[in-house]
Amino acid sequence: MTLSKSMKWLCAGLLGISLLGVAGVVALRYQASTLGSQSSPTFANTLVPIDFRHPDALILSEQLSRLPQDLLKIPLLKATLTEEFAFYYEEQEGRLSLMGTLRRLAYEHDLRLSDTLIQQVLDSPAELALWRGSDGKLNHWMLSLEQNLVTRALQGLAKIALHDSQLSQIGELQVDGETEPLLQLAYGYQRHLVLASHGSRLVILSDAGMLLGYDKPATSDAATAENEPTEYQEPKLLDSQLAFLASALSTSQQQPSAARQELLLPEPTKGHSLILSTHFLSFGYQRFFPSLQALRFDFDGQHWNSQLLADESLQPWGWDNQLLWQAAPTAPALCQSLPLDWSAAGKLAQQLNPEDGALSAAFTRLQAPVAVCWYDKSRLSTPLFIARFSDAASADKFAAPLGALFNRVIGAYEYVRGERFPVEEEDTEQAHYWSRVVSARYGSQLAAKEPFKDELSAARYFPVKLAVADEYLFFSPDGSLVEQAVAVRQKQYPALADGMKDANLVVARITPAALAGLLEREMYASLPGQLEPLFRNAAKHYLAPRLKTLAGYPPLTIRRPDSLLSLKTGRQWQPLDWQFDTP
Image 1 (tube, rainbow, N blue to C red):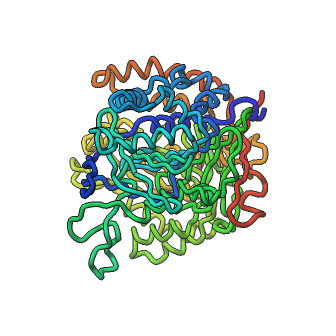
Image 2: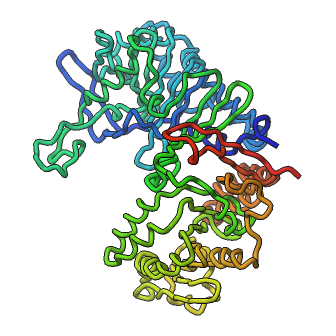
């Protein structure tokens, strides 16, 4: 069955949880002095370098407060999420702190601030852009909306900015020939918001550091970056960032925001659109598959749909996955393919092993796409990677430099042994193997019964393995998965492609029962009972039942259209089809 009337995807729900959480809770680390007529704000250790044109995530919503409820129209999410998710905004600690601050301001300064002010913001059409912080989480955001009642209230706040300890003016904006104040509102413990308005438009920033930077250093050294001064400087409000904020408030032009233009997003429609950049989803590894640029989920008031922003010009050799699934072992927890740019990977490999001139040639013979698969019999940290050479002759020719690369970069110093474990090389009729033992606290194997246990630096280890079999290249920190993949090539184990319809179009395969089992084991492994009994009991009470519900769903297949990265050119949004297996 299709997912248009049932569960479109687990990913949409997980996205909603993370984005709504960071939208409500913001931690800031700076103090700003109140502006007098001659004084200026002081910022210390507050710089948050972001690019306003390229958010890591973007939410376009007709009514932001309805997003949790609309996500629950996906049956799987309704079955697995708690009631608190739907009413997140009502009892969220940041909202309660902000409401208390606004009530105090209204009382002490005789302002007409309605108790429904925040609800009016959440009920308005909104654009919420989010950026990663230094910890990789979506800590920084900018909310843009049109709301006349709210902007009139903000004008009242501006009049008291010089007379209140929680409200200060930190700068000014020039918008459509008018000067507008830039306000900072402190609320709760170490929480601040930056607010600016013009006409009926309002912009709220989570952090004044998003507007800060340094003057260009007085040096001719080209290697010195603009945001890295040669000597200590106080950060200042950057004209470029203020200009972007002013353009977001301008009413003189009715153009989409810079972020929406960059992502080729259409005019806003009813419902919601959730967009995640692949740079964020890939933890910064998007340089290896530049053709995939963003994932988008749309809700039209009735159904959820998904699309992928792809650029065929950056991946001219297409995205045919059939040969990958013929080599992948069956029943993965999660298996997905990526149109890898091997030239980018080859440059990195050459830097790791510059002495081997054949290594660059080896990477030119590897084909896109590649597959990465997780299995419930292994660990979350031990996926299986599958790649292909252009032919078996190329695989035989370039196996040696790849083995040398394995020897150079795999493994770590074993402080008990005094050196790394040696690489064991084996050549059989089925494949050529390279393997190395690597100690690790969360390794996939226990060392208790191994003859080398006394030489390990931990109680567990990874049996890391690389194999070349026919034209295929297999790699995993868990060598048993590599051996199983080789067995698939020898017809000794079933392949994922067996019984798969339109295997060339399949970009991902999910087995909920296996995924739930894998996640549950990893959950308990990360929370030892003796050390974290409170967290362990909470996970057992809240998370384990949801994983059990997830395990009851049939396997899920994600397919791309025939045209994706094969017929069309340039950057375009292409629909994705998510389907459960039918009995």
